Image (cartoon, rainbow, N blue to C red):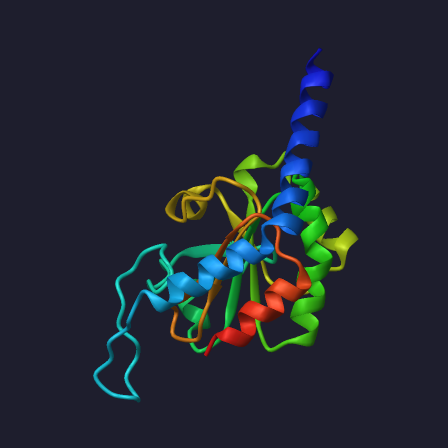
Length: 192
């Protein structure tokens, strides 16, 4: 009985992810463009940093965090200021995350972008699962380990969830669900 319920849930999640990926791309792009037009960012001069409230909305400054990488280094989001960032929340157990990873790796290799892949470690069975996943997919971008605090701060509910953050630390795009390579490139090209 439990296996049947788990299979039904997984099939449902995969079906939703595929629906979201293929049928709602245009809607999310149009929504993103509309949201981008609705905000203004004030700065004192061209050389000064952009000033924006910290938050999760498009046009807000992305909340800073400090976590360890899979390699044991401590990093902060603010360490990457000046770079275009894709912040992606994922888990090894998540079929849509598995589908998205090859596109993320290709995106990382072919474009000037920093990918911060935030593993939701509090949902994992072991660190070995995460290490095996990274090795199996040949991931070369930074894999960050979140014990749940960052996912809570970023209000991550569906997985994967991605934020595109510009070089000033401002959220330019937010995606709840899978992104494919073309979507990643399209959103990167819109950022400064």
